[in-house]
Image (tube, rainbow, N blue to C red):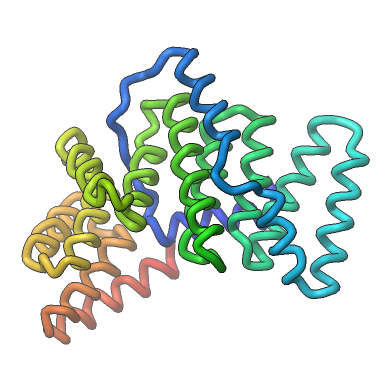
Length: 264
């Protein structure tokens, strides 16, 4: 994996705190084929977004993309193509276009055909939802993220991380016709995995967003009992106590957050 793509995964891990999720039973091979086919269909043509993004780049940035595209066209084998696609994904992410970064990460996933590769594509698209420059790009990124998560889950339903990532994406960017779906999925996961700190953290985070501060505090205290040195838990605790106007505790956990971030 190239350094830019590793950075993509690291950023997502920081933002989503290595999320987790899981409600599907293992589907048949036919279901996986159907999910892969569905992923190839989209309400927005990627070529439109690519042109808009490319036109917005500076001259040096365009030159970099053109060079990588030329190298991709000249690739002599699959391994070389994969490496160039990963570099394209990383460069587009560096230039601020996570939707395009996700597109090339998706092509890598099609080659590698592993749940980890599909998970990387999905999380890269998910980052693009909040960074989108238009509603069209936002809708595209969300649609592709959810479908890629579903492929990853289909390939490895025992890997909770993919499932929680999808749930958190749906909670952060809810569907108008089912706005509680993401939270409901997280609650279901919590019931099935009561000691999973990542799930507990996410539920606490959303509780804080909806001003359910005491419930969030209860969850974070549980998480700290399970993992006292969890970075995300300590950082959330600092935010929580700030909301509760407890400056002493907020400062204590802020120091813990800083220390753990710089030692892990």
